[in-house]
Image (cartoon, rainbow, N blue to C red):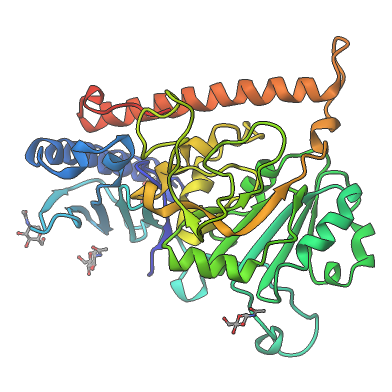
Length: 417
Ligand SMILES: *[C@@H]1O[C@H](CO)[C@@H](O)[C@H](O)[C@H]1NC(C)=O
Ligand SMILES: *[C@@H]1O[C@H](CO)[C@@H](O)[C@H](O)[C@H]1NC(C)=O
Ligand SMILES: *[C@@H]1O[C@H](CO)[C@@H](O)[C@H](O)[C@H]1NC(C)=O
Ligand SMILES: *[C@@H]1O[C@H](CO)[C@@H](O)[C@H](O)[C@H]1NC(C)=O
């Protein structure tokens, strides 16, 4: 049986296979062993560079727990895969495993964001653990359905009022892209006047935000075939943008998370995301005095905005897990993206040579609800701010518990956001 892979960062989880109380018990034991082992690592290798870096790098340390149960007993071995000495600890325990139990393997790799799990009740040959957005025919041989398998995905969260802008934008994405539209106004069928719309995927759910859709419809296992995922707003001017060229530059400069440079326009913009005329890509900038505690951290580096981000497959796998189901506006995500790639100040950057204009058309923000005499956009804005605070609190709490569980003193690390 083959394990299916879920990438996460520093979080233990094997819930999909929890079927029976005694299995639950075993997982708890596995996790416990992991905690002890984390402690062991922390104690034994205090000089490892990870302990000198920021919070996120401690989560990066790779090791795996392999729980291997066969009938009549259970063996867990822990493999410090990132340590060159190939440390390995086994713990064997005998549990009451009755004959009906099936073999499973649970591989947990901290930090390299992989949790391999599974081995449920199916033979591996039938397990289809990933999917895609490729459209198929209703007739003929399935093997002949697909004339192409686009390697990139672009999503726009749209209202019909922005159709001309989206039409212009979609044309900047070649046939190598699957186009997926999230409709927040329920007018999905009206787009068929555009030829490309007939090949696009349309998802309609009223008055939802980009991050609400992303969490629900862009699970990493669903978008697994795509090398890069663009998760864009609807109000971007794309006259000076070409998606294929953009991806070439991302690859050339080793970027895992990126956005096109923003043409400086009226209103507040972060220095980091402003387009620079003199280069292809930039990864660092200077902000107003006092804004950056560290030049390698947001908002001076390792930072893009949530308006037009582009993620590599691996980076998206991590970011998807960080998106909270109830915090729909995604505020604060931009500051936390750096937790998903390492080293963040080298793998997050802005592509200046392919740039866009942020047109700031009021759109979803106006779909709020007027309350207490306040205009709809104001209630939305207030919620955005509140969500940002909640997200920061949750992240800080999660990191605190993580360190506590690992037996590491959190005060050794400087907290960033
Ligand atoms: C589990 O144990 C079986 C038999 O002891 C062994 O063949 C198999 O390779 C083990 N699997 C893992 C993932 O360790
Ligand atoms: C780990 O398990 C293997 C196979 O069961 C055994 O040969 C080895 O000695 C064990 N290692 C330790 C450190 O217990
Ligand atoms: C296996 O164990 C569970 C719980 O201990 C028990 O309810 C079940 O009847 C057992 N199955 C067999 C086949 O012994
Ligand atoms: C689409 O991808 C193929 C294969 O990578 C490439 O040869 C082709 O140039 C791409 N199309 C465009 C319009 O760039």
